[in-house]
Image (tube, rainbow, N blue to C red; front, side, top):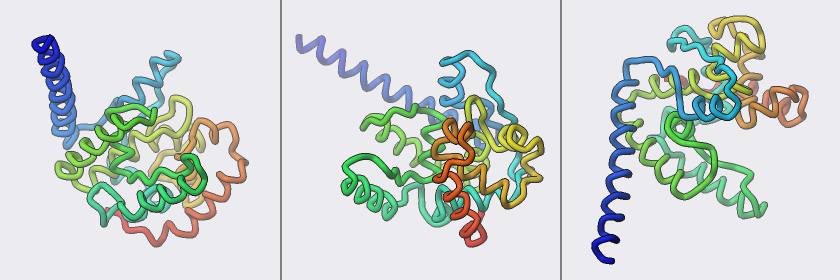
Length: 223
Protein backbone atom coordinates (compact mmCIF):
# COMPACT_ATOMS: atom_id res chain seq x y z
CA UNK A 1 0.00 0.00 0.00
CA UNK A 2 2.82 2.42 0.89
CA UNK A 3 4.59 1.63 -2.37
CA UNK A 4 1.39 2.32 -4.34
CA UNK A 5 0.85 5.60 -2.51
CA UNK A 6 4.44 6.63 -3.20
CA UNK A 7 4.03 5.88 -6.91
CA UNK A 8 0.82 7.93 -7.05
CA UNK A 9 2.53 10.86 -5.35
CA UNK A 10 5.49 10.64 -7.74
CA UNK A 11 3.11 10.48 -10.71
CA UNK A 12 1.28 13.60 -9.53
CA UNK A 13 4.57 15.44 -8.99
CA UNK A 14 5.73 14.34 -12.45
CA UNK A 15 2.55 15.66 -14.10
CA UNK A 16 2.87 18.98 -12.27
CA UNK A 17 6.48 19.36 -13.37
CA UNK A 18 5.57 18.54 -16.96
CA UNK A 19 2.88 21.23 -16.91
CA UNK A 20 5.37 23.81 -15.62
CA UNK A 21 7.87 22.76 -18.31
CA UNK A 22 5.18 23.12 -20.99
CA UNK A 23 4.27 26.60 -19.74
CA UNK A 24 7.93 27.64 -19.49
CA UNK A 25 8.82 26.40 -22.97
CA UNK A 26 5.70 28.05 -24.45
CA UNK A 27 6.62 31.37 -22.85
CA UNK A 28 10.16 31.09 -24.24
CA UNK A 29 8.83 30.46 -27.77
CA UNK A 30 6.19 33.18 -27.57
CA UNK A 31 8.68 35.84 -26.51
CA UNK A 32 9.47 36.33 -30.20
CA UNK A 33 6.74 34.43 -32.10
CA UNK A 34 3.05 35.29 -32.61
CA UNK A 35 0.54 33.46 -30.44
CA UNK A 36 -1.83 31.89 -32.95
CA UNK A 37 -3.80 29.68 -30.57
CA UNK A 38 -4.56 29.60 -26.85
CA UNK A 39 -6.24 27.17 -24.48
CA UNK A 40 -9.39 29.32 -24.53
CA UNK A 41 -9.45 29.20 -28.34
CA UNK A 42 -9.07 25.41 -28.32
CA UNK A 43 -11.85 24.94 -25.76
CA UNK A 44 -14.11 27.29 -27.72
CA UNK A 45 -13.47 25.40 -30.95
CA UNK A 46 -13.95 21.97 -29.36
CA UNK A 47 -17.29 23.05 -27.88
CA UNK A 48 -18.96 23.78 -31.23
CA UNK A 49 -16.36 22.99 -33.96
CA UNK A 50 -16.88 26.41 -35.56
CA UNK A 51 -13.84 28.28 -36.96
CA UNK A 52 -12.05 30.73 -34.69
CA UNK A 53 -11.78 34.31 -35.95
CA UNK A 54 -8.28 35.48 -35.07
CA UNK A 55 -5.65 37.59 -36.83
CA UNK A 56 -2.37 38.47 -35.12
CA UNK A 57 -1.30 42.11 -35.24
CA UNK A 58 2.00 43.47 -33.95
CA UNK A 59 1.98 46.09 -31.19
CA UNK A 60 2.45 49.06 -33.54
CA UNK A 61 -0.36 47.81 -35.80
CA UNK A 62 -2.91 48.29 -33.02
CA UNK A 63 -4.49 51.68 -32.31
CA UNK A 64 -3.15 53.53 -29.28
CA UNK A 65 -6.79 54.29 -28.53
CA UNK A 66 -7.39 50.63 -27.83
CA UNK A 67 -4.24 50.28 -25.71
CA UNK A 68 -5.41 53.10 -23.47
CA UNK A 69 -8.98 51.79 -23.43
CA UNK A 70 -8.08 48.25 -22.42
CA UNK A 71 -5.77 49.51 -19.68
CA UNK A 72 -8.48 51.83 -18.36
CA UNK A 73 -11.03 49.03 -18.39
CA UNK A 74 -8.97 46.07 -17.21
CA UNK A 75 -5.81 47.12 -15.38
CA UNK A 76 -4.95 50.79 -14.86
CA UNK A 77 -1.92 49.84 -12.70
CA UNK A 78 -0.49 47.49 -15.33
CA UNK A 79 2.79 49.40 -15.74
CA UNK A 80 3.46 49.55 -12.01
CA UNK A 81 2.72 46.06 -10.67
CA UNK A 82 4.63 42.81 -11.14
CA UNK A 83 1.70 40.65 -12.16
CA UNK A 84 -0.52 41.01 -9.09
CA UNK A 85 -2.48 44.04 -7.89
CA UNK A 86 -2.71 43.23 -4.18
CA UNK A 87 -4.83 46.29 -3.37
CA UNK A 88 -7.21 45.36 -6.18
CA UNK A 89 -7.43 41.77 -4.95
CA UNK A 90 -8.21 42.97 -1.41
CA UNK A 91 -10.90 45.32 -2.71
CA UNK A 92 -12.45 42.50 -4.78
CA UNK A 93 -12.50 40.18 -1.73
CA UNK A 94 -14.23 42.84 0.35
CA UNK A 95 -16.87 43.42 -2.35
CA UNK A 96 -17.46 39.69 -2.74
CA UNK A 97 -17.80 39.19 1.04
CA UNK A 98 -20.23 42.09 1.25
CA UNK A 99 -22.39 40.74 -1.58
CA UNK A 100 -22.09 37.11 -0.51
CA UNK A 101 -21.11 36.09 -4.04
CA UNK A 102 -18.38 36.66 -6.61
CA UNK A 103 -19.03 40.09 -8.15
CA UNK A 104 -15.41 41.21 -8.67
CA UNK A 105 -12.24 39.36 -9.65
CA UNK A 106 -9.31 41.68 -9.13
CA UNK A 107 -7.24 39.91 -11.80
CA UNK A 108 -4.59 41.87 -13.65
CA UNK A 109 -4.02 41.74 -17.40
CA UNK A 110 -1.07 39.42 -16.73
CA UNK A 111 -3.24 37.02 -14.72
CA UNK A 112 -6.00 37.07 -17.33
CA UNK A 113 -3.48 36.36 -20.08
CA UNK A 114 -1.94 33.45 -18.17
CA UNK A 115 -5.43 31.96 -17.78
CA UNK A 116 -6.31 32.50 -21.45
CA UNK A 117 -3.07 30.98 -22.73
CA UNK A 118 -2.87 27.88 -20.56
CA UNK A 119 -5.95 27.25 -18.43
CA UNK A 120 -9.76 27.30 -18.40
CA UNK A 121 -12.54 29.52 -17.06
CA UNK A 122 -13.95 27.41 -14.21
CA UNK A 123 -13.01 28.80 -10.79
CA UNK A 124 -10.98 26.53 -8.50
CA UNK A 125 -8.04 26.77 -6.10
CA UNK A 126 -5.99 24.54 -8.43
CA UNK A 127 -6.60 26.84 -11.39
CA UNK A 128 -5.83 29.97 -9.39
CA UNK A 129 -2.62 28.42 -8.09
CA UNK A 130 -1.46 27.47 -11.57
CA UNK A 131 -2.52 30.89 -12.87
CA UNK A 132 -0.31 32.52 -10.22
CA UNK A 133 2.71 30.39 -11.21
CA UNK A 134 2.23 31.11 -14.93
CA UNK A 135 1.78 34.83 -14.20
CA UNK A 136 4.97 34.90 -12.10
CA UNK A 137 6.96 33.25 -14.90
CA UNK A 138 5.49 35.49 -17.60
CA UNK A 139 6.25 38.72 -15.73
CA UNK A 140 9.89 37.69 -15.41
CA UNK A 141 10.34 36.42 -18.97
CA UNK A 142 8.36 38.99 -20.98
CA UNK A 143 8.37 42.79 -21.10
CA UNK A 144 5.21 44.72 -20.22
CA UNK A 145 4.92 45.68 -23.88
CA UNK A 146 4.97 42.00 -24.91
CA UNK A 147 2.40 41.02 -22.30
CA UNK A 148 0.02 43.73 -23.48
CA UNK A 149 0.66 42.86 -27.13
CA UNK A 150 -0.20 39.18 -26.61
CA UNK A 151 -3.18 40.04 -24.42
CA UNK A 152 -4.69 42.32 -27.06
CA UNK A 153 -4.20 39.58 -29.64
CA UNK A 154 -5.70 36.73 -27.63
CA UNK A 155 -8.51 38.09 -25.44
CA UNK A 156 -12.08 37.08 -26.31
CA UNK A 157 -14.53 39.59 -27.84
CA UNK A 158 -17.50 37.32 -28.61
CA UNK A 159 -18.40 33.85 -29.83
CA UNK A 160 -15.26 32.48 -31.53
CA UNK A 161 -13.85 36.05 -31.86
CA UNK A 162 -10.34 36.44 -30.45
CA UNK A 163 -7.95 39.38 -30.61
CA UNK A 164 -8.55 43.03 -31.33
CA UNK A 165 -8.03 42.70 -35.11
CA UNK A 166 -10.79 40.09 -35.45
CA UNK A 167 -13.00 42.21 -33.15
CA UNK A 168 -12.40 45.39 -35.14
CA UNK A 169 -13.25 43.58 -38.36
CA UNK A 170 -16.36 41.92 -36.89
CA UNK A 171 -17.88 44.95 -35.14
CA UNK A 172 -16.69 47.78 -37.40
CA UNK A 173 -15.35 46.30 -40.64
CA UNK A 174 -11.99 48.00 -40.20
CA UNK A 175 -8.47 47.28 -38.96
CA UNK A 176 -7.39 47.47 -35.32
CA UNK A 177 -5.00 50.26 -36.33
CA UNK A 178 -7.91 52.51 -37.31
CA UNK A 179 -10.09 52.25 -34.17
CA UNK A 180 -11.43 55.56 -32.88
CA UNK A 181 -11.72 56.41 -29.17
CA UNK A 182 -15.42 55.48 -29.11
CA UNK A 183 -14.86 52.20 -30.92
CA UNK A 184 -11.87 51.28 -28.75
CA UNK A 185 -13.84 52.01 -25.58
CA UNK A 186 -16.74 49.86 -26.78
CA UNK A 187 -14.48 46.89 -27.52
CA UNK A 188 -12.74 47.22 -24.15
CA UNK A 189 -16.13 47.43 -22.43
CA UNK A 190 -17.09 44.03 -23.91
CA UNK A 191 -14.34 42.12 -22.14
CA UNK A 192 -15.99 41.14 -18.83
CA UNK A 193 -18.77 39.24 -20.64
CA UNK A 194 -18.14 39.32 -24.41
CA UNK A 195 -20.48 36.54 -25.52
CA UNK A 196 -23.44 38.15 -23.75
CA UNK A 197 -22.64 41.72 -24.80
CA UNK A 198 -22.11 40.64 -28.40
CA UNK A 199 -25.88 40.21 -28.71
CA UNK A 200 -26.87 42.84 -26.13
CA UNK A 201 -24.98 45.92 -27.25
CA UNK A 202 -27.42 48.36 -25.64
CA UNK A 203 -27.13 46.76 -22.21
CA UNK A 204 -27.00 49.49 -19.55
CA UNK A 205 -23.98 47.99 -17.77
CA UNK A 206 -22.08 47.83 -21.06
CA UNK A 207 -22.90 51.44 -21.93
CA UNK A 208 -21.96 52.63 -18.44
CA UNK A 209 -18.69 50.75 -18.60
CA UNK A 210 -17.94 52.32 -21.99
CA UNK A 211 -18.52 55.81 -20.58
CA UNK A 212 -16.20 55.13 -17.63
CA UNK A 213 -13.48 53.84 -19.95
CA UNK A 214 -13.78 56.93 -22.16
CA UNK A 215 -13.44 59.12 -19.08
CA UNK A 216 -10.26 57.48 -17.80
CA UNK A 217 -8.46 56.14 -20.86
CA UNK A 218 -6.34 59.27 -21.39
CA UNK A 219 -4.95 58.90 -17.89
CA UNK A 220 -3.45 55.46 -18.51
CA UNK A 221 0.22 54.85 -19.28
CA UNK A 222 0.93 52.30 -21.99
CA UNK A 223 4.26 50.40 -22.21
